[in-house]
Structures are given as structure tokens and as C-alpha cells.
Image (cartoon, rainbow, N blue to C red; front, side, top):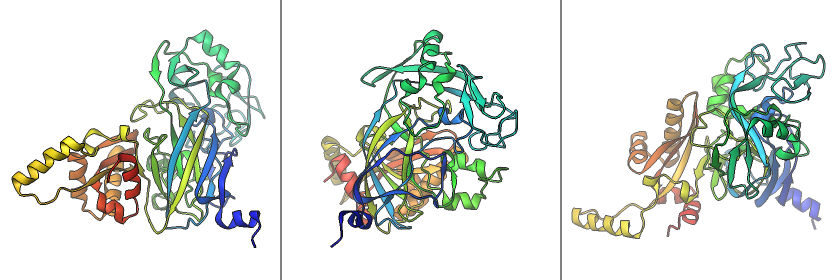
Length: 442
């Protein structure tokens, strides 16, 4: 008889708690946590993405995401459905804004190839001296070494209920900078410098709603790459790059899993279907955002620490190239929403009048598309939908126009192609259960 340890190694642990972080590189050869059982739960404490790692040259990928977790039974060519059970912000303040790249402090790409301008050390260890944009200093030579500063920035505080944020003035921002680690609730494993250190205050007194989501959620790519570049737009910067993580266009297309989404509908209650390109899948998450308008037009939003709970399910033989999203009903575009009872009755009346025997039963679904620009990303999402459903590209374009929408996840190159797809086709792929549960379909 198997003991409990042998049993968990065979079918996976029911719950995997994750407190370990990567140094910004998603490497399929690195050991994974788990495995978590098929149907099990991953609970993680995530570090802020973007700005903190961006001003910490030692971090090689632009973010600090969680160490990937293997899912028992997941094999290359399968997919993993991730039910996002909870997303909770633990930071009580953060800072953000438009970035300004600092010339001479990186090798081709400031997100993943930092260089000290004083001593030339690649990915130098740094320390914080004081506050402000010159506070990040190389431990070896003492030079100001941050690859980024703000073009226009703000410091934002959150209420205790984490429902509202308010940008604060310079004096408060500087006070926050003195207590930055605690206010940002940085996980114990994090090595990033907190962005509150910079104390930006170019916008004061702007209030906004909070609606947290995961900017990074997905599976491990089949080639080592910077975490922030695991998508078609940021990934394009790796093509022909002068640093160690350079890829060809063909390698990028084959190996990425588009886990760096920045799609604000990847939030509590949604279901994300992800491709499996390495054994075990390797679920990772991070880059939690307190809020974000469609497109993340400033290039960055309010990066926060937080906790997330995910329920994972292996879908055998569902070979997909990129993520498929079933958003919560509130996030479904107007034309893609299922018809209500009154609308169904009107449609039935039209069918009788015009001799249409059956009205198609459809369900909302979003196909994520990525590319070097929005045109490429849109085509990618449309083509993924057509390939998955076995429909022609022109038909998918028509469906997205008359019963859906194209929405920008991240500018310059992540989109959501959402439309009502035939429920019978989703059932045939094993995904109808998610649509039925989320949208109350029969």
C-alpha cells in the first residue's frame, strides 16, 4: 500500500501553497513545485510585478512571478483549466506611471538585460540609499543603476476594504517611501526594491475604483525566457536581441504560452484555459494589478502584492496554442452575452416568421491573441478561434462583429477576441461545462 508521501507524488497534493518566487526567468528545466492533483488547489502569495522588478537590476525578467507548480497528469498536448477562486490585494499603497528608459543602463532591453553604468556589471546587485529616483545603487561601485525612472508618476493609497484608491501628494508619498516594504506587503521571498521608494506625485487627488486581477497567469514556456516576455508583443523584443535570452521569431512562436496577459478580465470568478508545452504544465502567476483600464495605455498600472487561489483541471488532448478565457458575466461584451428570456422569445418569433427551423445556442468565449502590434494580435486571436472551433476565418470575423467584440488587453499587442460560439462546438471540445456554469445556460 502506498504511504501518504508516495500517494501524493503519484496523483498530486490536494493543495499546494506557494511562497517561492523566480528571478524573472521561466525555465522549463528548473524544478517545479507540487505536483498538485488534477482538481486540486494552488494558493499563492504573489509579489508586485512591473515597477519593483524594473528598478531592481538583479531581476532578469521584468517581473517576480511564483515558482511554477506541476499538475499531476498534465502532458504536452493537453490543456489546463484554471478556475480563479480568489484574488485579494494585500498592499495598502503602491506607485506607478509612464516609464522612462535610462540610456547606458541595459544591453538592448531594460526589462531583462540590466547593466551597471558605473562598473559594467550585468544584472548587478543593488541597494536602496534614501528615497527618490536616484536611490538604487550598485553594491559594487555605488553608481545610480536603475534602468527606469518615471516620465509621469503617482503614488496611490488604498482604503482598508480595498475598494477605492486615491493618489496622494509629495509629502505623503515621501512618508510612504520610508515605510515602503510594509505598505507594499512584499512577500518574504521577494528581492525587488519597492517602487514606493521613488515617491512620485505628479497626479494628486485622483480617486478610482479597484478591481484586482492577475497580469501574469499561465503555463511554463518550453524554452527559458524572461517572464514579462512570454507573449507576442513583449516577446518580439527577444527576436535578434543582443543578450543571453535572444530567440528567433520561429522559436518565440513555438515556445511561448502567452502567460503575460495583462487582460483585466482574468480576475476572480473567471476560467482560463492554458496550453501545456512542458510536462506538468507548470502553473505560475503574479503581476497582480489593483486596477486597469482596457489596454493598459500608460504601459503600467497599479502593481500590488496579493494572494490568489486557483483550482486546476487537466483537459486531456486539448492541444491549443494560447489561452482561452471564460470571463465572468459582467465582463462579457454586450453583443456576446447570452440572450435573456424576453430576447429569446423575440428571436423565436422572428424564426417562425421567416422560416428558420432552429436558433443556434451560443455561449460567450474569449480567445487571447498576441503579436508585435494590435493588428497582428487581432489576427492571431481570430485565427486561434477559427482553428479551435473548426470554422473559417471569415465566419469568425463575422461572429466577432455581430455577436462579440475585439477588446485590447495590453497595448501594443494583446487582445481578447470574444463572441458567442456554438455551444455544441464548445461541448465537443470539453469546454461547454465552463460556459454553462458561468452563464447559466441549459
